[in-house]
Image (cartoon, rainbow, N blue to C red):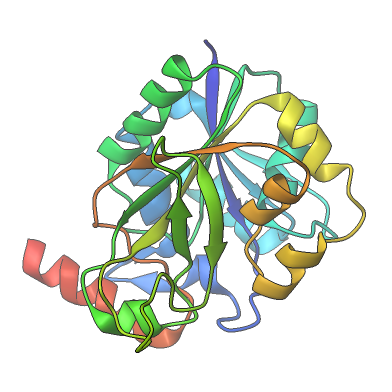
Length: 242
C-alpha cells in the first residue's frame, strides 16, 4: 500500500491569521508539524498543501516538499483531495498543520489501521482528561459505536447526563486516512453539507454522504492550535520536555 502524508496549511485563519508561520520556540508551527510527520514516514512521502506563496517560500527555504492548491478549498480535506488528483496513492494521511505536538506513533497507528481496514476512512480519538476541554467549543467530541465506527462528532459538550455533567468523553485527534474514492466524493460537493456547516467539523461531511468512519485510539499528546492561548500550552509542553 502506497501512502503519502499531506499537511494542509492555510495562511488565512479566522481566529489566528498567519497560523502556519507562527514561531514556536524557534520553529514555525508548520515546520514542527512536518518534523513530527517525517519522524513517522520517509520525507519523500510528506507534502505541505498550501495556497499561499509565503508558506511555499518557507517550504523552499527549509527543504519541505509542497503542493500549491487553490484558494477556494472549503476545508483542509478538500485541499488533500486536490493533492490526490495530482499525486497517485492508495491512501492519503491528513495531518492537520496546526498540530505541532502530533505524536509520530499516532501517524503510524493510522498507517497500520489503513492496512487493517483497506478502503476505509480513518480518524483518531483519545480521552478528554479535564472539564475545560469537555466544555470548549474548540474541541470536537466524538461519539462512537461499540465497534469503533463514528456515530457523531460535535463541538457541544457530549455525551452528558441529565445534569449536563462531565462523566467521560473523547475528543478528535486530527490525523486521518482517506482512500482516493472517498476524497473524490467529498470534494465533489460545492458547499459544506448541512450538519458539517453548523458544527464546522469536516469529518461530518463523510457521515452525511453515507460513509463510515472508523475511529482509532491514539495518545493524548496532540494540542490543536486555534487561539493564541493554545500556543502558550504548546510552549509549556515543550519546556517540560526540555
